[in-house]
Length: 382
Image (cartoon, rainbow, N blue to C red; front, top):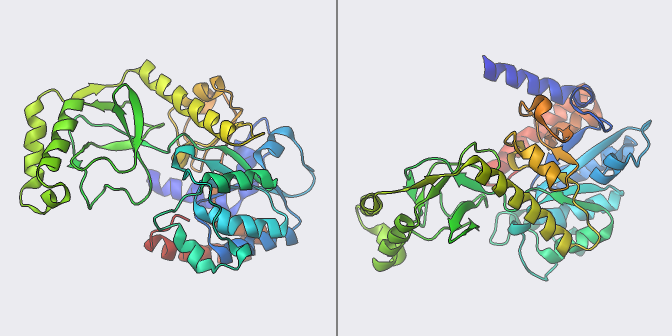
């Protein structure tokens, strides 16, 4: 019954976006906001065309916070999360062509440290080829591309956490890192492991690494910190037995479990102050890395990954110099606990309703949802 109510509520929010944002937004103008990940060229071009034809102002977060826009004219916020390559190769050329600004919520540790700016639609590259880049070996933006986006004046950069990571939330492993399976993770989400005395984001943990139950790093109420000895011994077993070839032998999982069990003590649970300190480090380092890399950029807004957050995070965000929390529908039940204004966002496909009205927009929305499912089946994130 609760899930049905949530689905009905979400549908209502999409059908009546202005009412939804007026209800949930405080202290700033309630401008409808939408978020995207990997960009589909045909759909995004049509969206930009409708934005211009409808006379909409496409605002950035800075413009929203500074009230630097005409409140009497229709407005919206286009935002993109993570930093996928199609933001540079597809979204930016199209948006600039139509004179539209957007905000990129960036994950700095996920960005490729390369001086290369790759081909875009402006270079005559094929849109289908560029879309496949998001699913290839180099799916994320390079820092050179991020710098070019920022310097263009059309793309604003804000923070989306340091690494979009996940942490362990159980005291016993559910699996071990293997050549196939959950790790390496195809969705580019790292595990945050404590190696030595510091946290490290591991997109591909060493083969044999014990992997526990996982939850988003900035949502989990308590984090389990693994025993380093158990980890090292499991990794050593794989290395001593031929690396990847070890996983072709029968009983490899049982052997790793036995190795793990022999250690005895498996690890310990993170304390509340440790968790808050981890939050501070994440938000501070993300902000510092972006501002150091990008001249003239000031991080003012923070969008927690997955649009969700632990209640303590709002106070940490305020302490680390942020002015706005940008989340997603459905909003978490934070109520008056939040130390900062909270701004919701709707999924990108729902923008058709805002641009074309409840009838034509709903038809376009349903078509866009079908297209999204096709893309998801191929591994894309809409």
